[in-house]
Length: 213
Length: 358
Image 1 (cartoon, each protein chain N blue to C red):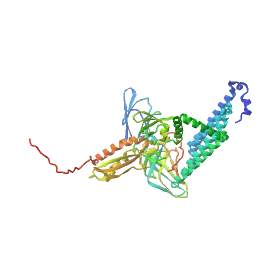
Image 2: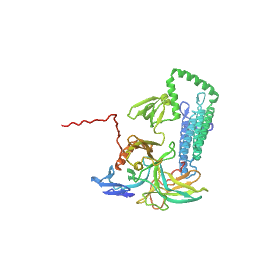
Image 3: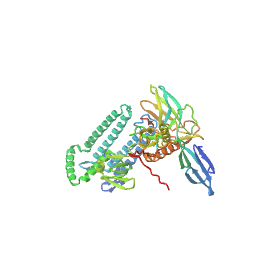
């Protein structure tokens, strides 16, 4: 699914979408996906199918609501995974030839009606082992406070984030959630969640995000 | 900011040649150098702060905003020093020196930034229960700092002694202008108030003074609106200021309200479930706040179900146009009848029907 493909006649299945490459005369390849159609001149370069953060129509945050809230003891932490939506970027060289959304697209308002922000929305269980999903985010939830804390959702900044992938799965960078005072603090570290993954982007962390609401 | 000790250095040899009036080449070179060094320092500091913001726990103060503010501060200071090198700052303006005016502006601007950031921080740190009270206190704090900074800036600018004179002059000028061009001044003043009030900005979809459209331009005397059917409407700022303004895109989310009527024989709960499922499948119907679907009233011909769904403001029109069609299609698929209006007529006298045979 993710990776590089030769520009020759073939089908590439990406989630619930199909990319169709069709060789035509003079080394020209017809690229087809749903209603999108492009002609690509083949010069030996490969077509790259890469994961991209789920920005949808142009949001900058991803909200993942846990099916079951996670409760953390004082001065303790837990590591786990959530399913997360991803989008697909199809590139030749550095040029993006197609961008599309796979799976369910949904949004939610984070914050108040007057001062909130619309973000991408997903509901997921909190898994202690890596789930079998196309998009995954690894979390470390830490509670340095002297009180028990409960967490029912996270809001992660994703605009400009790096992404990581292996053949069948896409990963957001490691996300560290620190529960202190009133507001959880979210750190998209930019680091790969595990070894052996290919990366898209510079691997830089994003500015910390304070969940005010 | 004095250049007494360095003047001789910058005016030796070729640097001492005059390029324009009393301006020497040395002064120009010095000004450019100061500006370039200032910009480089500003960029380095911004880069450092942005990197630091990724690891610090003090995100509320070390963030992109602060980095940009400090960047602007350093660039402005470099500009002031550059002007100083050119000898421009000693120019008298309105009975005071230009340097005093710039210093006053800087004091006011950065006090304003400080007050704004402090206000945001106070609000951010408060718990939900105390939020309204804390918001009020934070705003009071903000306005106090800004007012003090204003008077301090006036003092630095050297206007404090002349304030009463200025006010009196402004009053007299106001009366003269008021009689001479009441409407123009009124529009101008309204424009200034509108700037601070910010009920709308360019690009906002609005309904105002009986017109509906996109704000195309905001000028000193008037505001221009492009109506939905492509007409230009020029509204004087005074009229705009006194009108009820409905800004359709001020908040991040907007609600779509529709009423769906189903036949009395249908199961209302089943219809509600079908509508909820349809909304769930529409990407731009927000999951939070959750859509509300309920029996609103028992109408003349149908059981009326109210659908209230929130959408991102910029997608409101798309959702509004799709939601009715999708709900209709879903109810059709499930075999739930949307009835025509029905009427039972009673006649005072018995109707007689005459049947003719061929």
